[in-house]
Length: 360
Image (tube, rainbow, N blue to C red):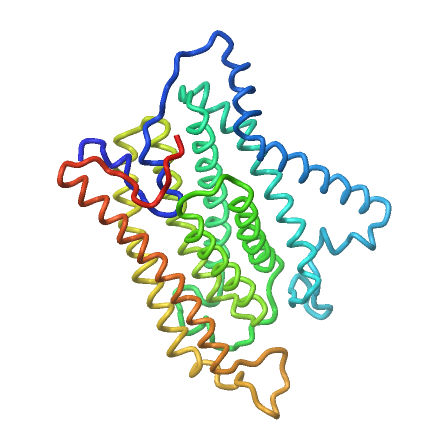
C-alpha cells in the first residue's frame, strides 16, 4: 500500500484525497498572501459571513425591542404544560430552523476562513489556494460531524430504544420529545438545508447531482420522520451516517497535512465502518421499517374511529421505505467506486477519483 491510500476515498466530495498538495515557494509576507488568497478564492465564504452576521444582528435587535414577536426564532415551541421540558411539534418549528441555518452558515464560514485556513497555512505549510479551501471544508466537516455524532449517540444511549429495534416503533406516535432530543432533530434538519445552500452557491462539482439527490432525500427523510413522529428511526440512521462521515473527513484532513501513514490506517478503518454501518446495520433497519414496523404499531393505522395526531397508511410507510432504499442505492454506488480505487492501488496503480472534476 505504501502510503498510496492517501488518494483513495471517492465518496461524496472525497476526490480531495486524490490530489497532491502543491507547495509553492514561501512568500516574503506569509500573512499578506494568506489574506489575499482568502479574499480571492473564498469570496463566497466572506459574502456568506457578511449576510449571515447581518441577519443575526437584525434578529438580535428585533428580539431586544420586541421579544414577543421574535421569540419563535430563538426558543423551542410547543412545550407541554403538564410535562415540562417535553415538546410536541408544529409549523412554528420552522422559525428556529431558519435561525439554525443562519448560525451554521456563520460559524462555518468564520471557522473556515479565520481559524482552519491559518492553521493549514502556518502549521502544515499548505500553500495551494484550493488545497487551503479543501482542507478548511474537510476540517469543518470533521468538527461538525464529531459534535453531531457525540450529541446524537449520547441521546441514543439514554433512550428507551437503545439496542432495541422493535422499540423504534412500539408506542407510536412518539409525540413527547425532550428538549434536547427536539433540539437535536431541528439542528440536523437545519444542517442538511444549510448544506444544500453551500452546494448551490459553491463552484459546481462533477458529482453535483449525486450530492444534490443525497441531500434532498436526507431532508425529505428528516422532515418527514419529524412530521410523522418517526424520530426514533431517523435518530438511529443519522448517528450511523455521522460516524462514517467523521472518518471520511479525518482521512482527507490527514492527506492534506501530509500524514500519509495515518491516512492509510484511517482509510482502512473508514472502509470497515462504511460497510458495517451503511450496508449491514442500515439495511437491517430498512428491513425492519419496510416489513416489521406495521405489525409493531397496528393501533396507529388510519381509520374512521381513530382519534390521534397522526396515523399511517401503507402508502406512507412504503414512501418512507422507498426513500431509505434510494439513499442505500446512492451509498452502494459510492461503495463500488471505493472498492474500484482500492483494487487499483492493490494492483500497483495510482488511485484516481473517477467521480470528481479536476479542481486544482
